[in-house]
Image (cartoon, rainbow, N blue to C red; front, side, top):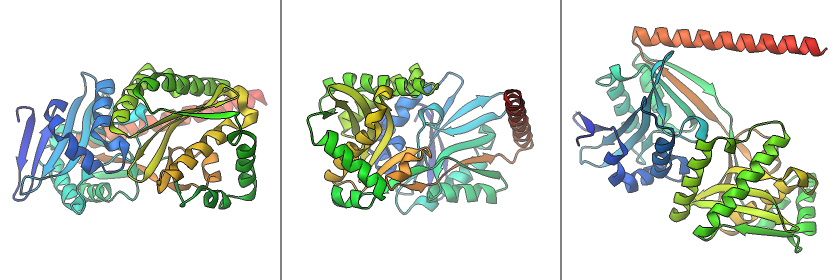
Length: 383
């Protein structure tokens, strides 16, 4: 308990963990509360802290126990110090890692208890520890976060909700043919053509990581194809960041050992043309990142890889396939439906915090206006 600060009420106790040393024994319970969301798991949060935690940031993981001493909730947060916004509470996994479905973890049936007690704790004894809660990528259907935001607003705090990008999820049928039959006629023809010209021949070969020694090769293929594709579009890829790349190499190894990782690449005529990196947990298969060979565009390598990944998910009995965050048009072509996410900003009711927030909002508005003006001037120059 040397690393924790306890706060006691009649029915619940909150313990603040300040390091992962105080949390390692709770790994199994943490993952139980995380459910079937990989980015909520202990391993993801701990690895993220190792890669993105800095000396200026402080861990603030709130552990909520009931009257019998059972862990019923976890708020996986850290405090980031900002010159403009002051002390900002964020989810572990925020920012560059692009972690979807972040949340306050709660035991089933105790969501309201956890949310109400956590709001009471932040408004009470922790009120001087933060100025702003900036919570990204929260599902709009997330009951715990919804109740928490309501309770903070009820206690006099300013709550802003900003629509984020959607994730896109497919409800999978019992067999592949039923899935294809449900597609639009042009897309169904596209899939059947890929099956005839590549998948049912010797041209296409799917390599799935099943042994630990295969990890490095597969991840190297993923990084190379992703970066080459982005460069062909004049963009920087995710794996151009050394920190992002090392984080995911670590996570891939950790999730492989846990039986959660899905990592594969497809060769066409003996050359890698597409790669798929994701996770399988519960009854959901998640597609986190991908890469395709730009020179093979005429062969539709992206569709080829998705076809193979979806077929595998259906054959393995998964009920849903989630493309995760991003509103790219190809997702709806695969019968995926949007799952809305929202970013929550909760401002402390203290005057200084309100002032900081107003200044930050004003600065942001000025930057947006400047970018719009610059864009307009460039457009006129080109005209």
